Image (cartoon, rainbow, N blue to C red; front, side, top):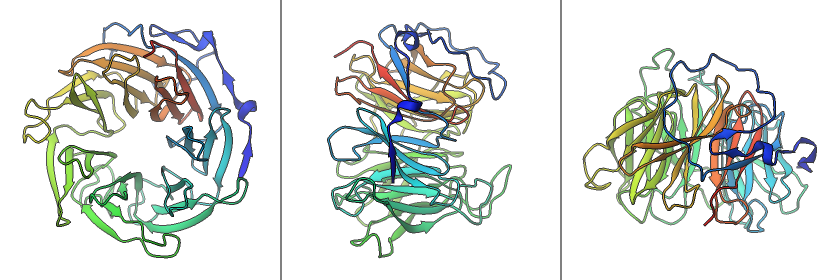
Length: 417
């Protein structure tokens, strides 16, 4: 494992990079666009003056930053940033943002997803990794691994194979059986043997892997959650039907589905939202759960679904509202209370055109109240996460870029709690 201080690649833009009232003040020259700008006008709503951020790039020249998340990697009770590129698994140590390279060229290109968890129970954070990413190879590739963190900083991480599934695309840990320990949920993009442009035929196999008692040497038992959906671009765990286990919200060409596992091990599926979403995240506004999607996959529209008046247990479809039709290659969503008002704001990013990151306020009926740009020139967003990194009660935004090939923290300098 290599480590180095990120100072050589670190650019802290103080006042000039703060987005004040939605007006970017960065003095940098804008990056060249990768695609034509969206033809649809952005929504005509105010900005949220309480939402202000300061930009800090903690890694440049990263290649495609396929995924970014947050985990305490060294056990110091501080949240660190974890990211993955096509060839590397890296983490950035809070508060210096020193880079630690866990894997470099040891998995088959490209890495595409990661999911931190103490897999072997030794008290150190490990990382599940999806690699051999090729969305057009529906008959091979899609390798699944886990990287075990060594006991001494600087030693080599152990890399273990778990399984494979063509077009393996997303990983999440979730306790779907209610036994307390999470399962590794694995989502491919396409079904086996399918082909463009429609990808019809066999559906994508959504899988749940159970961690064995000896994860480095024993096979990982798995079960098929579902194999009927197509273009399964993302999913997220959520507790909607029971409090002792996670359900799964799955975004696919067929809509938004809720999957729940019964005590007898059988899975039920319920359509809760129409559309053809590609991303899915869950927030809460006005005491009501709110779902957010990008539609279609890699698409143009940010869409919210509000919890029905009968609650999550209701069989009613969740009412759907498009709040922004102007994205170009939408590819990242997160909910967090950015301004301390008790309601979550929605963060969305897109990777094509100039790329960008914006924040939205909606009311409990899903009606757009404000749209606040965070970065409109230096982040071609591939993934986005939110977490309070400095313990001040205000969540930061962390994003990884595709064309911009970077990892960026946006420090929350807005209204405090």
